[in-house]
Image (cartoon, rainbow, N blue to C red; front, side, top):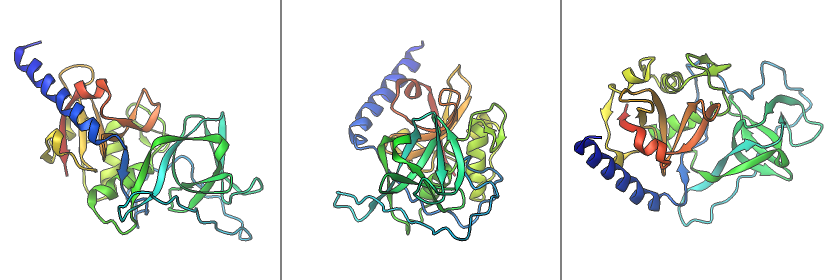
Length: 271
C-alpha cells in the first residue's frame, strides 16, 4: 500500500471512530408516511398481490411507541426481521385475519407500531399489515420522525424502506430480485431522478459529499473487490445505510461503521 493511500485510510478510520460515538443511539430520522405516487414497478414482497380484502374486516391502526426523548419528534417505527421459519402478514391483528402474504425467514419488515401480541408493518400501498410478535425480532435501532417531515432525504429513505426483504439478484430489477445499483436507481426514479444502471456510472452523478457531511438520502459507493466502484447503497443517518447485498440475501440495513464498509467506501453523492 502506498504512503498516500495509507494516510487516507488512517484519516477515514479515525473519522468513523469519532462518528461512532455520536451514532451510539442508532436513531434513524425519517418519516414512514408513504409517498403519493410510485413511478417504479418494483414492489415490496409482502403485499396484497391484488387479492381483494374482505369488506367485512375492519382496518386497524398501529399504536405507535412514544419517544422518551425531549425531541419534538416521536418514534414512529423500527426495522424488524422474521426470526421464525415463516410469518404470515394479516390484514387484522388476529389469528383469523385475512392473510396478505407469508414471509420466509430473514425477511426485513418496517415495523410501525403494535397492538396486543402483534406488530403493525408498513405495506407497499401505505396500509398496515399485522404479524405475530413471536415471529419477528426487532433490531437495535428505531425509525424516528414526523409525518410532516418533507425533507428530500427523509422521503428517499422512506421509499427505500419499502424494498426491505426483496431478494438479491445480480442484474435484477424487479420485485422478484434486485441488485445494488438497480435498487438505488429504482428508489431515486420514484422521486424523478434518473440514474445510470451501473454503480460505477452512478458514482460520478451528483454533488460530491465529504464523509463527515453525510445526510440521509445521500448515495454511497464502495470498491469492495478492487479499485473500481462495484457496490452502492443509500445513507439513512446515524451511521446506517440500506442496500441490496449478497451477504444479506437482499435489501437490508447495515452499519457503515463495519470495518469492511469503512475500508471500501470511496465516494458519496447527493442528488
